[in-house]
Image 1 (cartoon, rainbow, N blue to C red):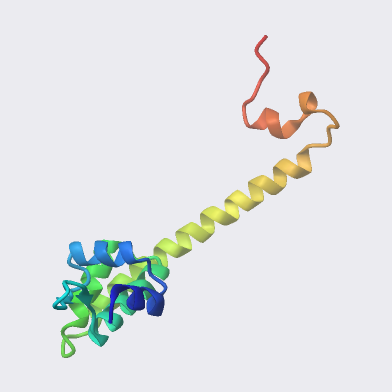
Image 2 (spheres, rainbow, N blue to C red; image 1 turned 45 degrees about the horizontal axis):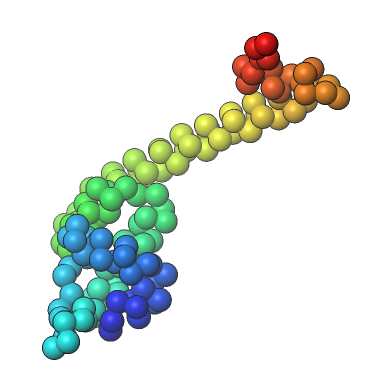
Length: 132
């Protein structure tokens, strides 16, 4: 299949596919007689794998590691488990940060009862002061 077909099948931009190929994340495609890239079902599977891993927040380095690990069906799963545990911890950290941010923004809204910007507690809490 051509790059446009692969892009459509996976929801990936053609430039991203070319980038993954340059970076060795996606194996180089064969070329047709007309020098077009010719992607196989294996490329489709690999790109689907990469896209899903990226959706789950794995870094490109982690995706590379997951791809390498996935090539060894008989190896124990502990390295994959470790990567998922690391990613889960990162997601939980981000959730905690977002919850704290939500609380702070809510508190800002609750604290401001002003009718005019000059009296606004929110603007004041952001550190904006008139300098004239």
